[in-house]
Image (cartoon, rainbow, N blue to C red):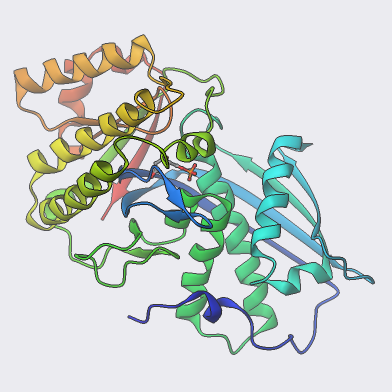
Length: 354
Ligand code: PMV
């Protein structure tokens, strides 16, 4: 598999012609990291490699309409509507995204853009809405690139989609790949690199073929500390280097567990990563806590249930208070009847199919 560098993603010449108007609608899923990315270097490069599963039912849908402009300005001209309304905070993030990527997609400056976007899940609740949002935008831009450069190499464009998405939000790089994505250089994962995410290259054991990620919506309020702020605190974090070593080892062990069908190790690493992510937050300067009392109550319910029944149900956390329960589908009925509060709880269910 070729590994591309930054220069490969810069178009070599201007397109032959530009359509006067262009429209495209696409969807992109969110993802949940099992090995967490927390801490970055340079321009949106990860401090450690991460591995995630796509959440195929948690989607952003974005429609783009582009009109060829008479003047080419330095800045990309766009209007961004979220749920039909302009949203200043999203628009600001997208303006930054365009500044970062325009060098690699210079043709976008020829157009005036309108983007209309919506999620089928609540945003800013520790579910990676920026991941699916920037993934959808990147898919749109790469679709235009394909139209403008019909000869372009498909594999390069596939990786360029992830490369662009990364410049919007690191975790977005993992929302444009196959179900299991790895982003960041890792010695045990061939082709892995910091610039874009790749499909996990090894065969996964059939034990993991049908599993569920059940998101318990414990808190729907906007989280108080953004992941950008959190990443920024890692640079001076006293546990920065141990964390880099831990993430590397955890990914090596997880990769083995995935290939061998070892749910116990998979679950142990998954929970260790979730708690480490939050421990890094609690031990940064300034420190902060995103878990809520309900998060801890549920963790203890899950642990009690697992100890009593031996059923492989594990949790992970994103940068928020909501819990993701991960388990093989075959145990769902037993989990729902054993943890009977689950039936009433507000939840989002994603079926992961490998
Ligand atoms: O992509 P960002 O900058 O929103 O960071 C996401 C970080 C975590 O969601 C906490 C972990 C991860 O790897 O997705």
